[in-house]
Amino acid sequence: DRVVELIRPFQNVALWQIRTEASRALLDLEFHGKGLDDALILFMQFIDKEPSLR
Image (tube, rainbow, N blue to C red; front, side, top):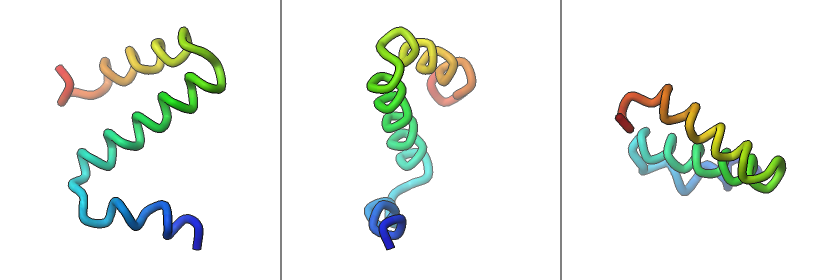
């Protein structure tokens, strides 16, 4: 049930918006768990792999 509640706000959202929110959440977790340096490294890796951001 908890997972359904987490997904519900994204049911009517475009796929790219979901990917953006998921990436933002991942960066936030990385920042709080490992610090700014690791979050920035992850962000740079994301930019390299995501063609829509180029």
